[in-house]
Image (cartoon, rainbow, N blue to C red; front, side):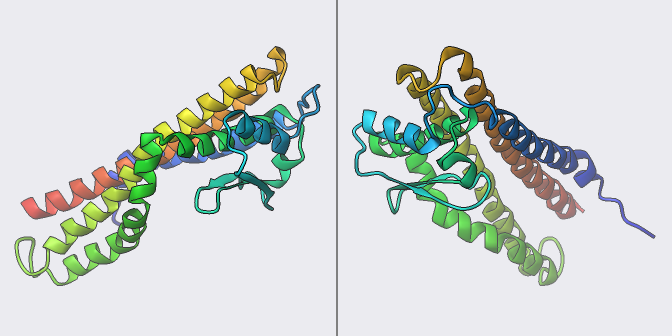
Amino acid sequence: MFYIDWTYIVLVLPAVILAMWASANVNGTFRKYSTQYSRKGITGAQAARRVLDANGLYSVQIQHVSGNLTDHYDPRSNVIRLSDNVYNNTSTAAIGVACHEAGHAVQHAVGYVPIKLRNAIVPITNIGSRLSTPLILLGLIFSGGADGGLYWLVYVGIACFGLSALFQLVTLPTEFNASSRALKAISSGGLLYDDEMDGARKTLRAAALTYVAALTVAVTQLFRLILLFGRRRDD
C-alpha cells in the first residue's frame, strides 16, 4: 500500500513548480533580450566597469568565467565574474546582469546592512543545511517515542533547516536592491537608450523572481517539517 504525503503535495509541490517556472522564465527572458543589442555597443564588462568607477571602486576587478548565468561578485577576492553570455556581450540583458553584479560590489563598499547580515550567517547556514537531515533522522531512530530518548534532535534538525529559510529571506532584499542600483546606474550613466531599458529591467525582474521562488520553497518545506513532527509529538 502506497503512502501519499499530502503535506508535500499541498504545501511544497506548488512552491517547487513555482521555482521551476521561475528558472525557465529567467532563462527564456535572458535568451530573448540577449539578442537585443545596445546601439551604444557597450559590453557587459564595460558596463560593470563604468558602474564601479562611478562609485570609486577602482580596485574591484572584472573577470570572465565560463558557464551560463554564472555571474557573481566574490567579496573575498573583490572580483566580479561575468559569464560567457555577459562578459563580451552588448545586449540589454548582459548589461543588466553585469550592472546587477556591480550593484553587489557597491553594497559591500557602502556597508549595506542586509548583505552584511547575509555574509555573516553564510557559515552557520552551510553547516545547518548539512546537519538538518541527519539530525532529524537520528532523532527519529533513537527517540524511543515522541517524548523520550533523543527526539529533541528532531527539533534541532528543524531549527538547522530553518537557517536555510532565513538565508533566503535575507537574500531577497539584497538582490532587489542590487537590481535597483543597477537600473539607476544604467539610466544615470547613459549605458542604454531609454527604449532599451525594458530589456535590462525585465531580465532583472525575472532573475528576482527566482529568489522569491527559492524563499517560498524553503518556507513551505520548513512549515511542512513543523507540521509533520508537531503532529507526531501530539500523537
